[in-house]
Length: 444
Image (cartoon, rainbow, N blue to C red; front, top):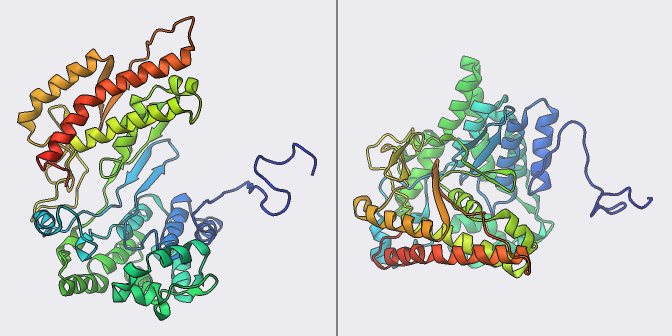
C-alpha cells in the first residue's frame, strides 16, 4: 500500500482500521460489540444496542462487571442534552455503619455485608423504557446465549481469575463457576454460567407473558423488572442474604429505581466535559478541571514534570474537598426511596439532595462550619483563586491573569505561578480534611 494511505497505527493486513457508513460499536469484548451491532442491524436505536452490549459484558467480563451489579449510564440525545442514569444501588435500609467501626476497624469486610442493592437490571430496563425502542427479550438474547452455551476463556480473564483464586475459593457458589475442578479455567476452554442464563431467560419470559396479556411494551418491560426486584429472583436473593447474615431485604429490592438526571458539566480547553453526579467521582473530575489552567498545561508540555505536578495538585485539592465536605448519607428506614436524588435544594453554599433521597451531599455539622467556610473563601481570594458553585459540584478556577516576564519562558512561569497558588490554596483544605479524619468525621 502506498505511503500515506494508511491511518496512524494501522497495519497493512492484520489490524486494519475499522470504517463504516451506517453505525459502529466499541466495547471491551468483541462478543459484546457484536451483540450491540446486531441490534443496530435489526433496526434498534443506539440505546437498544448499548443495553444489549452492556448486559453482554456482564456475562463476558464477569471478573470486572456483574449483570446484577452497577451500571452507570450516560446518554447524549439528538438535541445535545446529556443525561445520566444512576445505576448505582444504595446500602440496604438495615445497614449498621457503626458495626464496621466496632468490629472491623472502620473497614468494610470482604463478605456479604458489602452488598448494596443490585442496580444494573433496573438501570438497563430504565434506559430501554425511556430512550429505547425494543423489548428486553430482544436485547438480552446474546447475553443468554453467551451464558448458557459459554464463550472461550481469553487470557485476561484466565489471569484475573488465577490472581484471585483464593478469594473465589472462599465462597462455594463463586468457586463453582470461576474454579471448575477447583482450578482457574484455561485459555480457550468454555466459560459457562447456566444459572445466569436461567435468570436472564426468566426475566425475558415474564416480559413475554405480560406482552401476551396486555400487548404493551412499557408494561412488558416493567414485568421483566418485577421478575428481578419482586418475583422469584428477588426471593432467592433475599433468602440467601438471610441465610448468610446479610442486610438486604425484599423491601430494599422492591423500592429501588435508578434516577435519571441531567449530567453536570464543566468547560475545559474549549470542550464541554460531562460527568455523572455526586454518586460517583464525577464532581472530583469537574472540580479538578476547573482548577487547572489549560493554557499553562499546554505551555508546560504534555506529561512533563511541571504538567504532572500541576495535575496532581489540582486532584489533591478536589479530593481534599471530597474528604472534608462530602458525605454519603443512607436513606432512613421507612422513607420512600423511589425518587432518590431527583431534586436538589441549596443549604448554605453546599447543595444537598432532597430529604427523601438516598444520597445527600452536605456539610457535616453545617452550622459549626459556616465560619470555617467563610474564612477559607477569603484565603482562596487572597491567593488569587476565585470560587464558584454550579449544580452538584463545588468548582474553583485558578485566575488566568498571570503576568509574563519577557526574559523568562512564559509557559514555565505560568505553570510555576499556578503551582504556587494551588499549594497555598490546598493547605487549609488538607488541614481541614486531616482534622475531620482525626475526629472520625469521614464520609460514610
